Length: 78
Image (cartoon, rainbow, N blue to C red; front, side, top):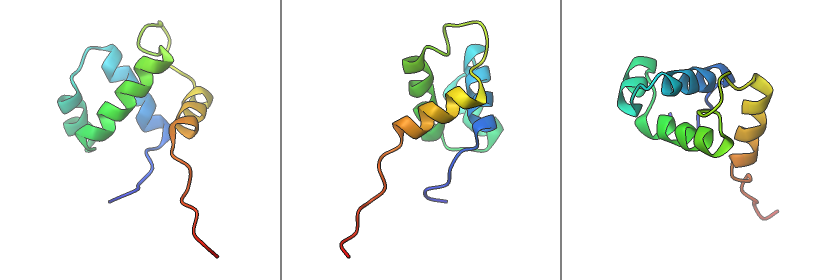
């Protein structure tokens, strides 16, 4: 389904599994999501430093990072 948003808890689960050392393909398979989606959130987690710290990111941190990384909505002529 194109354009589906990934819930914050799913992103947190992806980060948790990445911290455990699981691979992108395994995470995608077990969570039923696309490998590219997992890879996108892996890049986001690396950039935000979430994989280096002990605790998982909060829902608010994930929300801010995802909103900041999202492309702006398209502008249509009126």
